[in-house]
Image 1 (cartoon, rainbow, N blue to C red):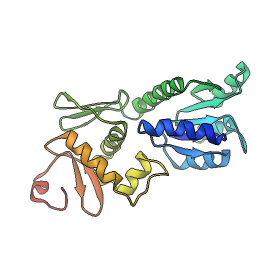
Image 2: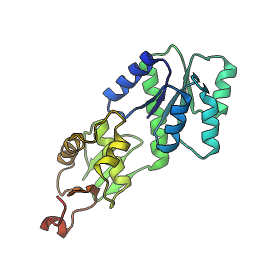
Image 3: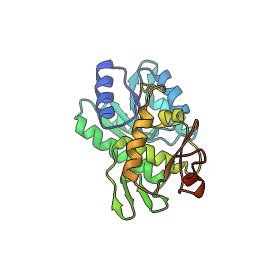
Length: 229
């Protein structure tokens, strides 16, 4: 998720709440920072304050839409007049929340935008008897519901969208964590171990030594220990 807000205290507060529920958050305090991040990262949602150093983020949204960027955008701003709301939505915004706001409402709106984004990208992901619905944030295997954390769900969805391809730890951190994650830590390995335990046997997520992880059905080579575990 991209969060553009020039008020350091407010940005930090929002980011802390989002991270506490397992979201990866990239923070930006200026329009230039948000511009660069929005074009190089495929975010699930972007939260953009309208008035920030560098200009009006509505201009960024309009340009991004013209360039084919489809990331759902929520404008968060003190500009609460009808004309301002219309201008933001016409610029490419998907939702608009006026300050001051209740954190519960912000989270509800983000969940709604996240569901829309997920349903467009992949209604249902399947591998063997594993079924994952990114829009509803549900997963089941063999008809049995799995209880996954937000981070585990994000990892699983990313692996399934890249099923059959080895995904490196660095790539997982870039897509499922944020810039605060240390790529030298064992955070990916710990999360992956817990996820694989919940998925059960036979294994659907495999470690490729020295390379990363891959989501695929278990093969005879896996049983023989040919470079994966």
